[in-house]
Image (cartoon, rainbow, N blue to C red; front, side, top):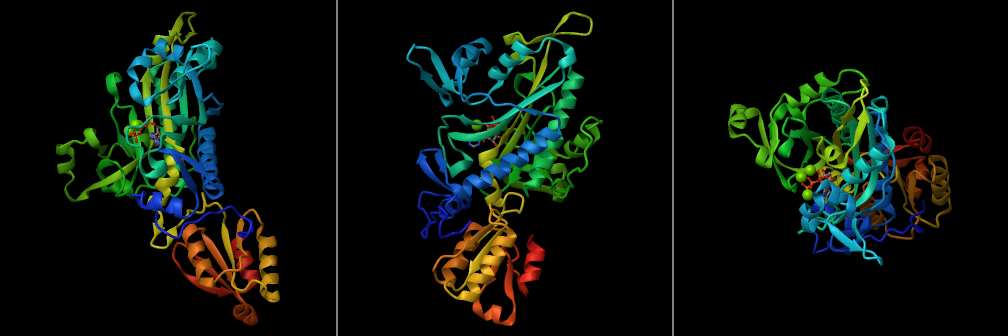
Length: 433
Ligand code: ATP
Ligand code: MG
Ligand code: MG
Ligand code: MG
């Protein structure tokens, strides 16, 4: 993409309304604009990152055996009356009435809709286990939308729902998502720690929040320091026994907010880490709460009806854009992990109009691939170009000017470390293709 034609409305000034660094940088780097409180328009650069995150989430869900579908954003209130949640959900739910005076709502979550799909389509235990997910916009009328996309009212969530015949099988489905989450967040360049979370009236130990440590997080976290160093499992066999992997992660103390345990924390002494964190995912064993209320049963092996056991698994896809920036930035701007970067390379032409420089840039642009390169071909001062490129945080910069070209070199800059190297055009290409 040529920057001269790219819709990238960056800001010079720091927007006063933004209290945390990710919010400031998302506005300054032209990733999004606020439309109304907690509601955003994603501009091309921000949308590109959002789609990359979404794709990584999707790949890891698929790998773990979940299947993607797409449920609507608008839901019928009748289903929520069946589960008993219509009145309980309160003011966070955006309620709508259509022209026929029927009650609708903009989905804040999808347990009712997926349970309705399940009961209408699945008859036999032979079709279990089943895990269905979608990546869809949600609306929650948060009391205090703030911190940009971190706590929006409209936000993008991946939510998966598992259906099993019994508790053992439900635990395996839970473990599959637990491991998929570890892998997903690692691929996004994040250290996300699973913490025991409140299970509500169902009880048990099958609820974990995945939290990224950051000073601006809204959760107060305590955990064993070793959790921050733990390597994420690779080459996982999702059909095999995942319990040892899950146990290795859950055996160490880690809790947030009201789940904290003073005795457990004190016992850790110096190995205890106390920090703030951002909730990026949450997995939850639901038991039969929805299947019982809504009659989701299958015929079991002995011919008798069995009410299925469910689980639900959320990831805050749009919140992750902010969380990644909180975890990866410096005083100059964003530093995208390569896996989610909107472009791999920023190509800077130091002297547009100079025939040799234009030609060298054109070659690099073509050979690196216009989809992977943001080419700053604007007629601007070098300083402004450097500042903009650092602000938007692409992993690599290639800086091309007449002086270097006279010596047969271009400059290659690693955005994360700031290290600069003079290399030939050919070796720059070899490193970046
Ligand atoms: P929070 O504690 O931050 O309000 P939650 O516990 O209400 O989140 P869940 O119902 O567990 O959220 O939803 C699954 C995921 O969706 C969360 O882990 C979070 O990453 C994301 N999420 C929830 N609310 C918002 C929001 N208002 N804006 C952006 N992402 C959100
Ligand atoms: Mg909430
Ligand atoms: Mg929460
Ligand atoms: Mg939660």
